[in-house]
Length: 595
Image (cartoon, rainbow, N blue to C red):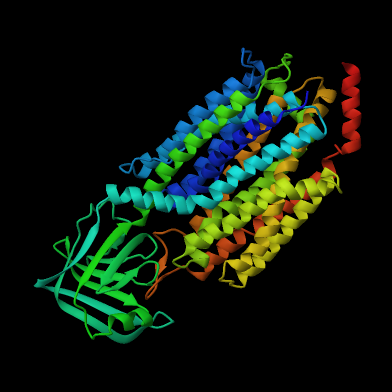
């Protein structure tokens, strides 16, 4: 009996929800703990990798547990629902680190929540993918459902990739306005003794010599909790505080002219009096803004407000993760209600040692497993470092907008590749030939990206070209590896006399998470060596700047290593994978004759 439209929709929605959760964790957990909360990049890299090593034992065990499960609701749906609910709770906790934690306490919190997240994700992911060979037959129906599920998973990933930065900023701004203290700047005609200097800079960020000084009537008071604003300023021995530019959001209004992080390359240098009141404020502005402020030869009013961007992002990730978690639970409930297993036949199970032996003996499954690791490590290295590339390399006050624009385009291409490009290519080529085309396209895209990055391209639009090739390849490869892995279940049954779909698909869960762990460790090493973070960027005369050597390390890591990984993947695949269409037909016929 063929799958109904209702079953396909229900199954597809589950893929959307679960990959929203996965992408939020895979792409932003390192950024959240390292760039926002200040955990060592190396510490986070080790945590992410150790969690994946733990999964090497946890995932196959979960596959066995699923295989042995017998309930009135089947063997898959109970674990799918239990895993989803627990994973949603852990996701929220993972992005809700208590602000009172720091140092080793924060590292421990990150380690415990992330490992628990991996365990609960496995609990849900293995039964989800194990359903494919359980209620489809080999061939077009299985390929169709695999393509649908991967396309829907791509939609979930794309949604998170596209909206996260902007959504976190919007939610965090709304929430932090109610939950954090602020630093206020006020003008008073009755109080003197505080100096404000507005200094003009040229295109090279050098002072021109033109200044507007106000020495009377300004009161600047710190009303914020020092812990919440420790990221806004960094203290020096002479008690001078320097505004770091990229950590915080600020707004100053001089008469009717607004200065903020979106329209000014200002740096604030301040001197403190009695630890709470500023005695000096220096504001560096470009010539256009200087001309506006100097139009009357002086200023008659001053108001201002400072808020911590780290606090905005901390609150934003907390409540955004809650929204994603709720959507995840709702979609998986729809999946559980909308589908039923087609076969109730018992699955033969074995001990852990026998299972590992069976996996090793299934040379085709192991070939695909290693191929998936190589491909995903390549793409995850880039996705982990992409936010740093936009924030510190392309930079600019609108880096969030450029990052969102690029991800919107990339996500759309990935979805189109899975839903349109793959079916179109499938009409003319075999799945193996499509795999070769996709990997070559990805390598080509990375080469173009490398050339553009090294040449200092500063506009986001040219980067859409390599983005097209890389993300189209990613979309197609996501569909193909699932099809290839499902095919190895039939191959393993013929070779080993046992259908190990749960264990085989547990390997997919494991290797995807292993790849994300390896990529996160590589990214963390890159960040540690290059000193890319809010707290280590060097401040120039009027804007935040990152050293050329740091950017070179970033550019090479996110391009050369993926190229190397993709090349190894295609060589391995072409040499070891033998399950072409003719071979699969032979296997299917042989298995039918045995029944």
